[in-house]
Structure formats: structure tokens, C-alpha cells
Figure 1 (cartoon, one colour):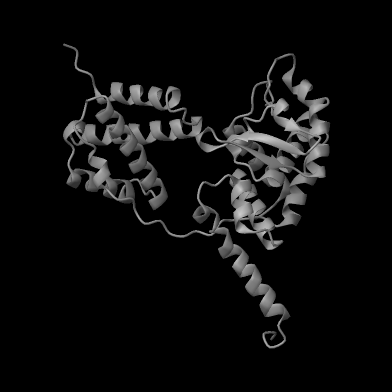
Figure 2 (tube, helix red, strand yellow):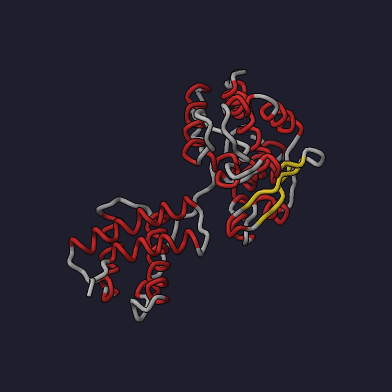
Amino acid sequence: MKVISIEDYIYDFLDYIRVERNYSDYTETSYETDLDNYYKYIKSKRINFKNITYKQITLYTKYLKEEKNLNSTSINRHLSALRSFYNFLVLKGICISNPFKMVSSLKKPILLPNFMKYSEFEQMINSCDDSALGIRNRCLLELLLSTGARIGEIIKIEVDDINFSNNEIKVLGKGNKERIVYFNEHTHDALKEYINGPRDELLNGNSSDRLFINHIGGELTTRGVRDIIDKIILKSSINTKVTPHTFRHTFATMLLNEGCDLKSVQELLGHANLSTTSIYTHVTNDRIKDIYLHTHPRAKK
């Protein structure tokens, strides 16, 4: 009788979350990395994955923190991947119970979201030239800031998802939930300019429904968007750390600073819980305090 290794079960699990659970490519890749790390660890320690104990899991968590130098967020992601993996093993009758259900997630420090100044965004826009790639990049930047959509949502947008009459786009968010995001006239013009010429030029005879095309005529990936932004930052000489998610943070911060209510921002961002959105109030509270200190006659220095 063939002995099935933990590696085989990991491959089966990754197929399961991709096909049956429809997890995103990013989540699948992250889980694969985390499970590979776990496999190598238990192999080096000669631990039977079916009988791992609470103490051994605690030592593994300590290993991730002290030897792999991972922060609380990354360790919690590891634990989440392993909880899901062992749930799968229980479902398939490989394990009797899930040992990772006993392990609590580490307390995460409250980190304020980073955001950019509007002047920095304008620098980025101005750094894009009028080549096909430059026009695409300008359109990408405008869309990121005007919609607040996640990078994974942006790259999945298809041309037919765009409603130019109402300046709306249908995006597919986490858990395959559809929602409508809105864009402004700057973005409207950037989209029209990109679609009416440069996009076909980048396709170079290929066929794709996706809005954003890479430099070789394929669909733009999350890694591709990150590379584009990194190059634009270098060209713009901006000192602020900017990632694709910075645009989302900036979007939320700008709306709240202009008086938009938290519930509306939650809907626009596609957050399932209001508590996720509430972190942005820390930023806006700092802004309110700054306004108070500079406007109240008894607060001025």
C-alpha cells in the first residue's frame, strides 16, 4: 500500500482551495509558501504531522518569530494557513481533530495606514510619458486612487465591466463578492485614452477581455503592478513608501478628511466589517487635531 506523504496532502489542499473554494491566486501562493516552510520544519524535527502537539506548535511559532524573524501578522497568516490545511485533513478523514484550533493568533500591533500626499500623486502622474506603456500606467494610477480598489480587483477588471455613462465599474472582491466602484472625470479621460489605442497596441494581435495588458501582450499581474509602481516612484523621486495598497489607504483617508461617513467608506472599500475601516479614523483624528491646534485662538502658539 502506497504511503501518502504530507507533500501530497499539501498539493491536494492547494487544488482544493483553488478549485472548490475559489481562493485568490495571492492567497494560494501565500499558503503554498507557508505550508512548504511548515513541511521543512517538521521534517527537520522528525515530527509526525498527524500527531503534532500543542507544545510542538508553540515551538514552531517561536521558530517563526526568532529564527525566521517574522512579525505577528506574518506568523498569524502561517497559523491561518495551517488551520485551513488541518481542517481539510479532518474533512478528508486523515486527522481526527485540528490541533491548530487550540492555538490563538498573536496580538497584532495597531499600525496606522500609510498614505501619500496629493502632490506626490501628481508627481507620479506627471512622470508617465505618452508612450503606450506611459498612457497605461497613468490610467492605472488614476484608477487606483479614484476607486480605492484592491490590486487583485484592479487586474481582474474587464473592459465590459466599465460603465462610462455612470462612471462606474463592477469589481469582484474578496469571497467573489461583486460591488460597484466609482471613478472621476480624470479617470474617465484616462480610461478612454488608454482603451482607444494604446491597449490594442500592447495586445499586439493577442486577445484578452482584461483591461490592463502588460508589455508582452499578456494580462497584467499583481507583481506587474508592484513593479510598475516601484519604477514610477524611482522616476518621480518621491520619498514616501508607496505600494499598491497605499492608494487604497489614501483613498479612504481623503474621503474621511472631506467629511465622508465611515459606513460609506466601508461600502466603497468592500470591507465586510466596519471595524476594519475604523483604523482610518486614527489618521483623520490626527488631521482634526492638527486643524484644531492651528485654528483655535487659545490653541495657537
